Image (tube, one colour):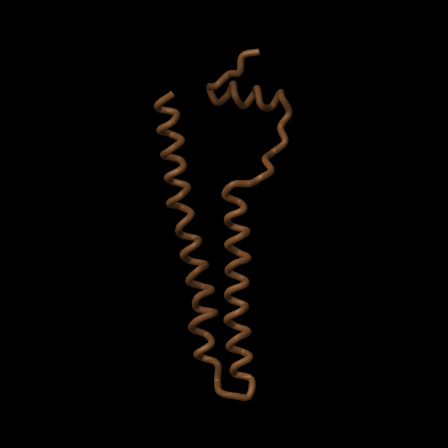
Length: 99
């Protein structure tokens, strides 16, 4: 049981460290769109509107992406498996379920 628990913790640690990279990358992309690009907009009558549009677009797109990404980490609905499939998986993975 201890080795199984340690394996689960190791898997959880790997998943946690692997999930940092996409968050950092997409945060950087949307930060460029929302922070850097508004300063590059050329002067004109609609410059302020374009800057606000870029900032709001970056903020809402990043927030939407983050919500979708986090929803996949712990899904509320799992796969629907028949009893036969569950018993077969348990047996193949070395945890047979006794009837």
